[in-house]
Length: 294
Image (cartoon, rainbow, N blue to C red; front, side, top):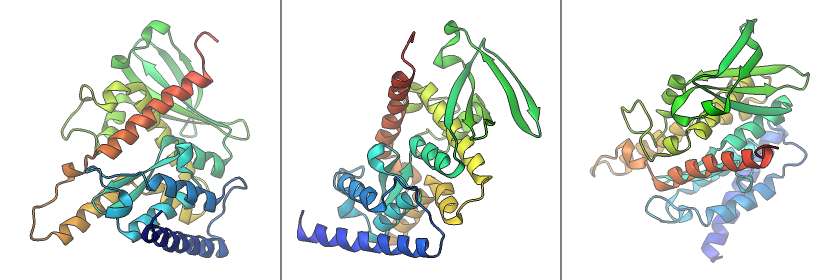
């Protein structure tokens, strides 16, 4: 490690640790017993040394120190570790962001609410689904599915069930139209498109991406109904798009007399790779947890 990189690491880590200690001292931040902010930042720094932008330039060379510190702080506040695929570092212009993965979303939700499990399922054409609504919440859900119904081109909806400590359940449903509307917010979605582009991550991994989307909504809605640290919730609720817009505004300001930067310019390779890795991880997890014909 060069002296310059070593000094950068020391300054940034010290800055983040100082902020974390302040939050802990004010009782605004609490970590689970098995989470070490120091170890998480060490893991993150190793990953950051290999993280590149869409031009294959190292993140630590092109990103501002403040954005690097903020990305690490976002990660630590949520109690997440990138080595566990709980999030990814993505470069937008000169801004580094930490984007929580669906694994990270579930980890935060389980930690805050004590949820025992978080599961998602796809509803295909031909499936039979019934449920009741009690006090504006879905209950007594029954889903019958034939193996022959499974076809990524015939997805009607997806739902997520959070199993709570008391044996109760929180269920979130999303129709395929709602899921596509959510996908439309992604930088990887073609502007104006109403269906998945052939060969895209959303088309290749339709089922997995749909599950990821409904899990994110369920966790976010349920977590926001809990009574927890405002610091954690503010970080958890921050949209990746906020970071994108911030990066665009920053670069436009720095290049006021140059070519205008368009949002499409930020459809970068690192983010696309992150979405593919995450989708593939969902598939791998299901194979491990639910072996065929077990």
